[in-house]
Image (cartoon, rainbow, N blue to C red; front, side):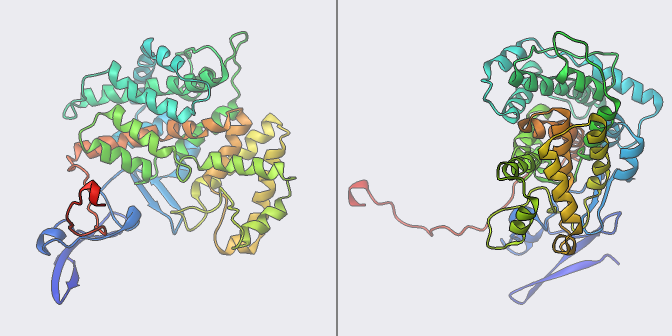
Length: 428
């Protein structure tokens, strides 16, 4: 017998189906609520308790600190897979065979040239423009150079659109950085791997050869994997709801990038470094700032600790902490900001106030440290986050379109004025 949930409204009982996911999560299916109750809705500000869709892409259990892509643990993927393998897994549902992997990479490389008129758009931005504003605009502009809409019923058309954006987006990321630094807008090397090519396009100087550092390559590969998807977060939900209007892939991705820009979402790793800079400017006393963080009367917030979803140690943070130690050790960087970060981390992991509240360093804390060590400017951190999240957004958009989900249209509880008569201006 199917399980149901009963809601009692003014003595009238209504039954709604209970749905159970493959990981035993339970949801009340209330899609008929408004119809059967003559207008009653649920109110859930921020959608913290509302499922907007069913999905087979990512499973997240914040209480237990579990993150899986298509059933594979994030720990195993970060250790054994490459970013492109994870991208393929997220988008198409299975890890690629050797043949599929080679074809996928070759098809992406074949699409890694951007229409030269895009350079003119890049040149039009002032150097003061925030990189996230640039990358969002450039992603949206790709629609102008690829005006035909994707036929979602054609796997071939869908695949072409996917490899196209995966090929062109790293170029836009690199050009955004190089524009800020006054460097020539250049292309990569088809002989390199995906992540190696990203690094070369970003950092190659015009008067010298670029030498790859394998420790840095491996760390960036892991970072991109860790950021590749994270269930129905703000930017992913934005991509899905934008795409639900049948907006194209590039336009939907641009909307997601704009959502990611916010300091409460993708901008968190930038906020971490800005906090560390402020602590340095005030003398670098980490004990003072840990005390401020514990003082409820103090407005100071310790950025990069705790997580809105994870009520345990962020599983991604465990992985990236090791990568951060390796990068800092290999590069031998002497940076007071990084010393402050390590001091905060050590004290938080040993302080019962933070341990008892499970306020552990999260992935934003460590990713900012790695990006800084790599020489990536602070205002580019969120752009790097977008590069990692790209396959997740694509997978979510593709799933939403293939599932033929209805256009997103939340309800509201109106609390404004009731009906009133218009008053002419001379009588107000």
